[in-house]
Image 1: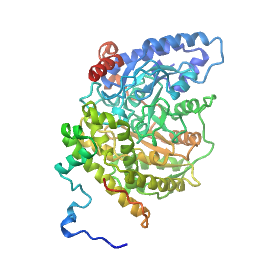
Image 2 (image 1 turned 45 degrees about the horizontal axis):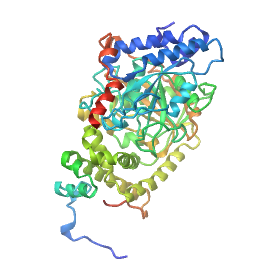
Image 3 (image 1 turned 60 degrees about the vertical axis):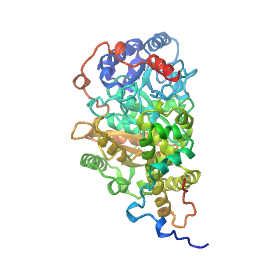
Image 4 (image 1 turned 135 degrees about the vertical axis):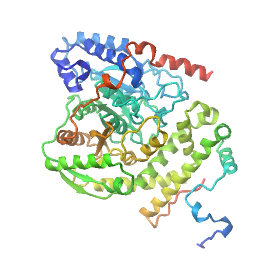
Length: 79
Length: 480
């Protein structure tokens, strides 16, 4: 399998790694895809916070998976 | 004899069994205490005064006919996420369905079959998940040691009611630590059983792969008696330890990974010294990291909780309180791949705890690395959540017993938890009983003097308590 390297423009700056890179507009799109548009429209702050916290939790899970089993094929997935 | 609300479950059972105490008199004494003090603590959502008195009167007659059941005449309270026949299960939420339970949850039925008397419903965090929201129709419970402080989550009312001596026994649920947190913060004892050891039929689910129901009381012995009845053992006896235990310390989980308040570290170390002096063997071991237990536990919990509330979140997200809504929405972002990865790691984490339990009687840990904080201090409440060492057992399914070990510098209780091997609750209770006896910074059954911490407001039962009937109206209004 070939290694895939993201172009520099698609990589997160170091200070953003492990943090949520998603802005409000992208959050809206995500909630629309999840059929939770009304929740986003009425409670946008809660929605963005929930997305950030879920993102942090998933990052932590991936780190732990690798720590526990560096050869793990199970890595979780992006939404 | 002490005043009636002072009696532990064990003492009350003996007095009721000997005929020194009448069930009606006992129920009346507890109702009077609730009436006097719950206007301050808000531990109860509903008081089943007439029903309890009627059952007590019937029991009084039975006393002369049959062999007495193990919980004869013992009043108990139930977290309002557990069904009780003829009562609305509100889950302390406007988003809850307006449903009158048509039968008792299995755990409630087992207590009733053991002769116990249902006394009322206790308050909780919304759906056993949210925080102490002040925009909800029901006020959050407050800590009887100091009403400005949190009584813990989410079986808050059960813990507060026990410390305020409203009943000798209460039922809680524990999906992420919700029995052990209020047990510690109110200075009482709580048992989170092995996953699937006690039936969860009749509980509104939070995260079905982690939900458990368990007893809370003021002493380990009382929890042991209640557990034996809940587990279907009709003897109603609490197990005892005939020797000093061997215990594993997993200090790395909290000393290395979490910020620990000095009060917690000092009292924990003092308690460990007491145990060693009394003959216990303490062994340091290392398990998987706290970070891994936290990420697997919370990711699993949010994903499962979101699935349960998905439709309501879509149609009417405003029915949830602010805290629980944001938490449920986190689960929307957990994909099938994330969930599968978490379950894969969960198996490995369970093995890690099993290995630490090899050739010892239990694992010993603090319940939290921070003492109870002020209820309305949002930052401190967030820090308190981060200080939890409880989700470990919900991830792995092991049983755990939380018990108090002393008071913080601000006069609020602190506690430890003993984790046992799966399906060996009786042994864990025996260890807990030995530990409680040997710790010199706490005497079993210690409770606050609520006549000093709460202003007496006679008549609050009639005027101040938000009752299920009122909730019923409110929910109907919301639904229409």
